Length: 350
Image (tube, rainbow, N blue to C red; front, side, top):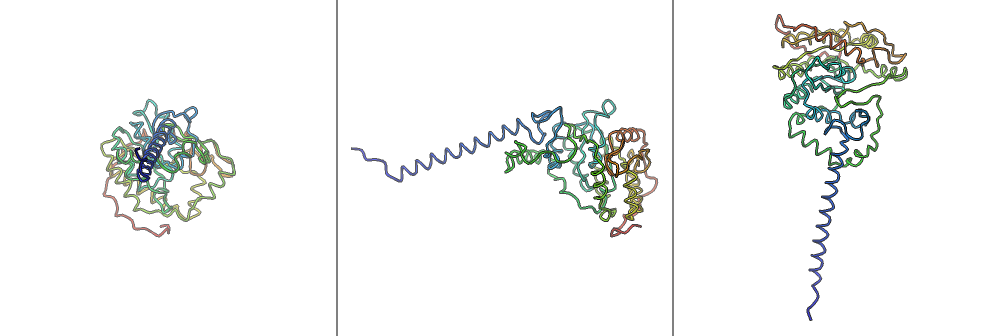
């Protein structure tokens, strides 16, 4: 009579079977997560209209929370020929649709919330790596060049194909993957909804919200830091060979009042002159629209106006005027060497 298998043999066989089952289960879950991520596309980086969007609009807060990862991946998918670059002033105020027929398409709004001047070289490297851009419009605001606390910076590796592939994998396989797929805890909390072209449609704010925006302006931290001009200069040098235009964003009268009350207007004027000289040294199209505009209808105590969302952000109606003025602006050229780099003033106006 043949003896029964020894106990160690049975244990080894059972362990091997459990191990194989466990690995197959994990692999199956990973493949399912990947398939669902590709299908649902919660970060809107894989196709034009994933199933969770309605009428081409993205109302998931994920796009706000992960903007600095989402937009580089969107840009690489869309392959825009015209690129709009700047802060939230750009992504709320410049509608790519307004350039239809007048600029190489597709047009993509690469505006990033609280963009700082030091991030411009990464955006330039991204545009060059993707290789589709022919025209770049750069909208600058004063706050990009100040001591305001910066957000986590745009990651340089996103300017490479390998870095973007790794970012896609991290989006699909992380501890928040299930929540992202189900949109749990990521319902929209900020006004507005994203479009597939990088523009954010924004409704009017009531008086309570515009007043809070005005009160939240940290004028004390808005000390001009001329050394931040180096980021702009580097980006412009990198983009040499493309059609590049630069403008200074319109500023509302109430915001100018806050800058004046905080003693920042001398620094603001110095910034305008410094940027104009820098862009001229690169021989690029330039328009200073900071105060030279007719849109003076905003009162933060009354809510959004015809032309302004709040103290800082203008509406697409103003954006159309900006694009028209920029199109008619002449190429600026330096007539003398740039002045020596200013040293920081420690926040004191000069």
